[in-house]
Length: 308
Ligand SMILES: Nc1ncnc2c1ncn2[C@@H]1O[C@H](COP(=O)(O)OP(=O)(O)OP(=O)(O)O)[C@@H](O)[C@H]1O
Ligand SMILES: O=P(O)(O)OC[C@@]1(O)O[C@H](CO)[C@@H](O)[C@@H]1O
Image (tube, rainbow, N blue to C red; front, top):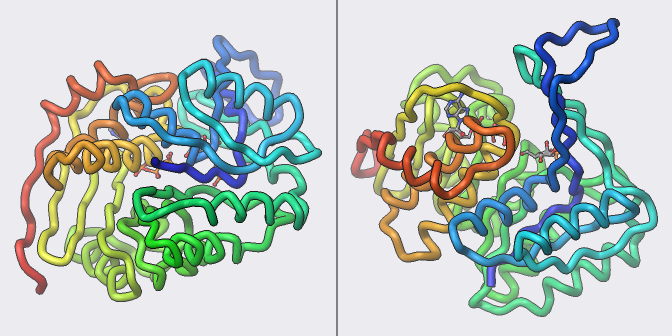
């Protein structure tokens, strides 16, 4: 089974305004509430691809109930540990440009953390875990390495989409792939990355630390997939960008869906990038029919076929 971990889920409250002015009364033309948080988004897009997963993490209060309800309605299994406080509500403002305000999240006690980690101790070598997103303030950041350790102890494969220290803390456990975006790579290595070669070099540094493959998402510029023997570049079609929230999560889901269905690496990468772009072009997350259409418009080129 595939398990997604969202330590800090959210209701994403998306507000579309024709314009947004700081310090003024703004009125929204349309609003949406989505069950969010990175792992949950991965579960939702996996489902669009017909791939089942179980959503793990911590939920609480009325937002937690909303999230569970939405996931169950979509046919996604959940096994969240309940916390006393309210799951956060993250505000996503769409008024010309995109502005996000992410809340810190509720308290998670040591007992609740232990209950969550015990769930991972039941997994076996047939399982795959996706770990992504922020850690609520009351949980120690070492939670990522605790999860990775439990995975490697049981031969459970895992994938990580997280920033800086969190990502760094799990590389030595050998994730199947990691998915930084370009800015995250720049922050990690303190460099400006303005071409495919410099991005590939940073991806290789993550591989030297233990990541088996690196998928670098480049927003509207597509993505790069770096493996031991290959560097693939995907170029995406242009279109009307509506809401990019969750596009990176959709990329992760597309890649996993392709691999789970025994597609080739290149086809899985195509599915990954098409899923990210389909999400960017819609209010909510990608839908299957849009992903299928966009897949035909993705161009993939091989930049390198062997290690430099
Ligand atoms: N403006 C855009 N036009 C077309 N596709 C896009 C655009 N922005 C994002 N995408 C698609 O989504 C993928 C992931 O985007 P991005 O690199 O912004 O990830 P991210 O920063 O992890 O996203 P997020 O944190 O919002 O989930 C890209 O590889 C691309 O396929
Ligand atoms: O605060 P985090 O955990 O880093 O990110 C949370 C979040 O911005 O990520 C998802 C999009 O990737 C949204 O559903 C959610 O609101």
